[in-house]
Length: 131
Length: 285
Image 1 (cartoon, rainbow over the protein chains, first blue to last red):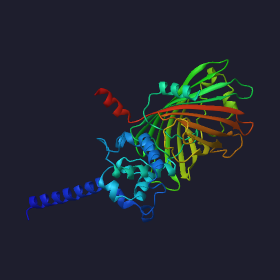
Image 2: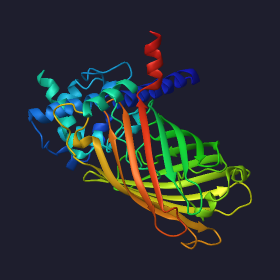
Image 3: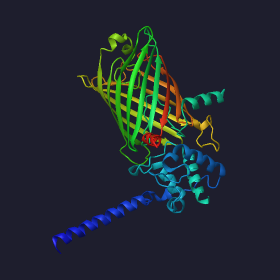
Image 4: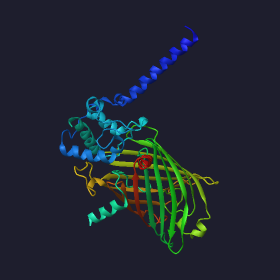
């Protein structure tokens, strides 16, 4: 193997690793950080129409300017109607994400909201796949 | 009456759908950072009358900007007005807050660093060292000759538990002239009146009000650490956050010893602009 071929192979390997890392981050790397106990948590407001309506209000006030009025996403921030949010993530995963944020990627912690309001937002988000 | 007030506030502060959810604290910092891209404009005031002195109004105008989820920067302009004396600009401050742990824990630390250049300041945004009644005795013309260029470091600890926010600040301040380190503290607890949101949008729902208690004071300096000749204040505090990003806060506070001003009345107004630079871009389109 010549020096040039070796350099090309190494560059290719680095590029593949970087794309895997970036792809993983964009593809919900945060899901791997959720502790099992949080992953299994149940939504105390599951299916309650009032909670979904209240969650919609909280979402519009705090989340819509990044994620869009109807959670469809904006230029800067992802849609919350994706397969990952609607099917792959449990309600416990979403609650964990709202409490802790994903600060490296620009998602702030919303622990300043009372826990019932966080669950109401989760109820609203999970109701979107029925639309 | 409620509708008139709501109409007036809506007219003065255009709707942005931002509900700031600010804590009702005047001195204590919580660990919660400004959301990235958001600018919060705040005006905080303190009214007091030291024994034997003139009544004063100390004010700060603050511009708080979220640079990152873990980094908030804030610029303050200070001023004061004293009855039978004068109204003066007292200086500026610039502070930065950094959150080293990027997830929520039982206790969340934040590092605070500030530079301030003030004189004759009466805003009482913090109490350190042997700050107390004698600092308010001099007329403004004399007090403003004492220029204070200071570095301030704070360790902010905050926790959220069952709707309660508990915040503690440990303050150390160093005048860049040859003066000793001074120390102080502040702590506060607050909770929204209702934890769950209402299904209908409303301006005066219980979840938009927060109430709590705040206490702060000085702890002397490097050579005389302790409570001797230090001032301390405590009082209930409350705020209301409107749907358009406006927050109104109020707190009557009481001096706990003869070295403190007997009563302080604090009130504040803040308004949050979401995604400041996005606003400009949208305006240009």
